[in-house]
Image: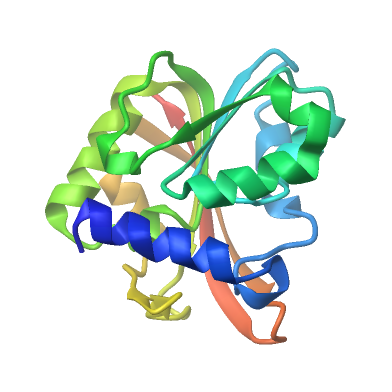
Length: 204
């Protein structure tokens, strides 16, 4: 799927569906927050949420006093929804609309968080573009959550790439040391279960 087709797909999803109609919605992204806390960085740490869409991670980070948050998504509509939800708080956040594989960061990040964006990259070119951008623009930590080998093979009508601890770690081995991996069942708004693998890494 090329970039513009991909963008149209996600604009349509966020245009036509509410959070309770998409499988990835979480009331509180506790696992993501736990990983971010585990790094022990101060509130001035630069955090980027890749494929953040209208996820509530940004709400909780703002509530905890984090000051340098960026949310990136391919869908302008998704980011619009998040901004509307946050109201005045949205001004404290940097919002970037782009395909992650075409992202040209203007700064580097202390924490790069990605829950369920990386697994949508299914070609070797897309995957290596992502890894290259991550390696160049992460100062300290990386948190990745993808569907596991026991998870779905598709999401939102698109094929995804499943991972386990070994295959996910292997992708980032050039520049990162694995810190911790966990398996987690995510219960969707439709009461189905999706198995995720989450790993955290530290830059060499």
